[in-house]
Image (cartoon, rainbow, N blue to C red):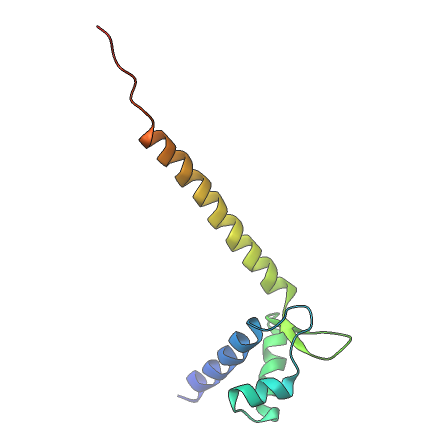
Length: 104
C-alpha cells in the first residue's frame, strides 16, 4: 500500500507541474502548498521524477518544470494524431466522393 501511495504522490506532483508555465516552471514550495504536502516530501519526489527524466530544474530559478524529454514525447504523440487524422481525412474523402456513372 505504501508503494501505491508513493506512486500516487509522485504522479500528483508530475500532473501539477505539467499544467504550469513550461518556460518558468514552478517553485517547489508552491507545489507543496498546492498539493498540501510537506516541502521535504515534494523535494524527495521531485528528485525521483528528475532521476527518471520526467521533470527538470530551470537553471536560472531553481523552479521545477516538465522535462524536455517529456515535451518531446508530447510532440511525438501530437505527430501521430496528426498523421492518423490525415489518413482518416483521406479515407473519408474517398468514401464520400461521388460515384462515377457507368454507361453501358
